Image (cartoon, rainbow, N blue to C red):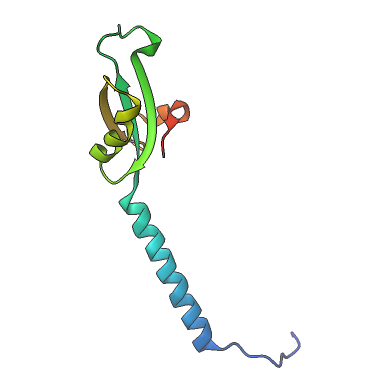
Length: 101
């Protein structure tokens, strides 16, 4: 049998702390839901598809595929841009992609 303790848990303080933590978690999850990871493929139409410089892959976070492409556009002038969710069918390309904040 454990020894008795002289302190007792303040349930109201514990409930307030729990509520504050739940609010913090909800805010973090909302922010994550607004930003998703995207892979943006930048292909050069003037280069042969067999050439290694034909396709450059970028990774970024954005709210929409169009916003992801607009973040990459200054880095890939003259290239065609295609944005895909980073968790989609091209997720294996994420390891080699260049990160753009």
